[in-house]
Length: 246
Image 1 (tube, rainbow, N blue to C red):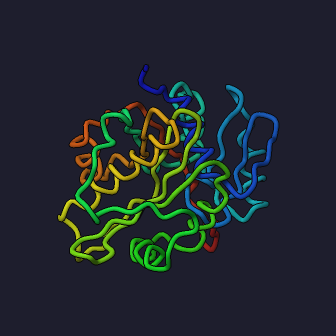
Image 2: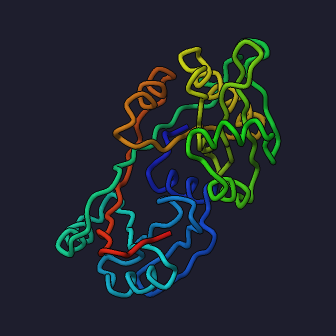
């Protein structure tokens, strides 16, 4: 089984973390994020030299400050946006691992599968980590097989994550561990629990998207023998005084 390529990872990410609405324009795919963060609000090009002004107008109509996802091979668009004052935002890397390697049994009572919707205690953990109602709405929109994972430490709820299947790839999103219960192996146990769920769905790979700056998360994924598999970055327009976006 070959390691998933960047195109498959991007497709799985979009399927499992969907925008509220997609608007197709000549040269562009515009995402209405409904406040759910960069990934569901970024536009992406569908041709080599799309009209930037058209994207900006569409984003403005949605109340969003223009933001573009730059994928491998889009160097010309990256250069054009930079010339218009767009700044690089949050370079992202995908990590992926074989489910068969990750699906080891965590300690008893440390991890539980919670079918959607999540329990209130999971929502509280997410809220502590900045994952609010708009991002929970993103999870709710995911249309395929999906599940949440609850991690426990000494019989206390300690962490949570969302996992959903997109083809041969299960993507894990929104992994959060309560600050006072970190460094107890909860994140690794949640990853193993997610892999067990993915195996039950017949999925071969578990993947995550993580910012390059998040060294702690990258170290965790490497420790689980997940490998970097390419990535992307954003270019964002600097808002004018008084301008805001969704």
